[in-house]
Length: 300
Length: 320
Image (tube, rainbow over all chains, first blue to last red; front, side, top):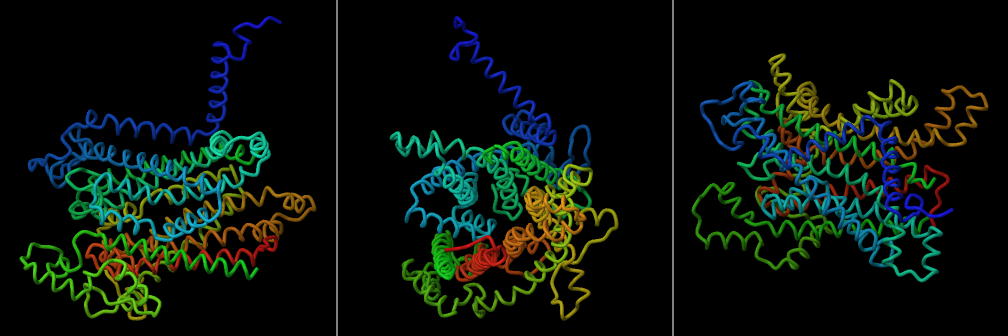
């Protein structure tokens, strides 16, 4: 049979068909996971909120206004105002940018670093592996919040130091997960075969082992973003987050707001709900990812 | 088997040593120091001459090179002397920890006593009734449990009780044996909040452990032998699932100790978590070192217990 663009595996039409099949496959899987899909959309909304934050605010989040102190939610102030007369809705939207930025950056950097270290540690083994494992054990035995408090206090709290501290927190778990997967993958037959054919370690790691590692890493990433945002909010609550007047969800729940929270619950309800829904969304998405990817993880 | 035990013990000691070095270096690098903090009571702009500052630093031993200082601390640690607090000059660091253990341990115990039975039951029910009308709400509840930060839940509860019933729980601390009623009245809310977070995690762990066991062939065999579900559950499913659950939960129990930090701050409980937070703020190096070593030791010991316990509980596991 003569080859045409539609049947030639490298043809443009075939490529298009391949993409459409993949898309259809994904839709089929995710249609059965409505919760995961909903969580994914919440995540998208949050990211958009973070990116377009300034445009979506109705008022200046840091401008004090003594004339409208502690007003209830209305058409002008959608979530009411706080003890300084600042619009709560705009502050929540501004805080979204902080939290999402910190969460994503911390996870991207932390997991990339953890992935690299974990792969090398697992693949090459030996004394270096032992040392790295003990160091990760050490970091993991310090409670997360205390680790963050210590690091952030040393380096003065700001966006970058918080991200750095969160990276230190995320790396050990990542290294463990990656190393576990590498140890398993290393013994697979196709890796042995590739090595017998003369493949170099780098090629083995990237081409054969890495794809197996991606699934657990993606699940870990989703959960880690939620954890990072939760910890960042805890830091903010304790007064060691991104410093005022920048609004963060954590510091909106602390300090002077607590004195008025009984008379004006919206000043704490809005940020509290924001944190909860955000972390919930990432956790639920991670769960759905695990359900989708896990059967494949088991090598069936 | 014994070679494995020894290897693990050596590894554990190594880990603890690494923790001590890491925390020592980090804490020493803190800008500002205990002197400033102590003399100016939080740095509220009191004028002190440089000479006085230097003298105080010398007396507190803050001017030594870091390696020397670390070796001195390590020596003390190994002989049981953890030093005196830089802020609370009359108190031994270890004595302060022991005093602060009371609220922290009681809070952790209460949370565990409330949370564990509930979480285990819900986890088993959720797994056994997978994908039914019982499973979904339980899964949602569990995931909410791990997603709601403790301070958000605390704020929500405090606001809610205040608005609905005009009730504000008291803050503070009185030991259990002095006034049990008042003690429980002070602790019930933080314990419930801690238990909620704890249960979320444990329910999920239990659920996946039981699900894994349910799929096994021997369970199917037991069913097909005609055994009643209750018997299968007790004799096969739970016996095996609880092995991995016990090991996972063991570690979570230790995290209860440190997870109480924020709640101790909110509810004014003089526990170890709150002490650590204050000590970090005040640059009380010996106190921070001691507290962190306390938490780290608890985690490492629990890890060890859980690992070795697993070898004991699961007859399939053999360590060379």
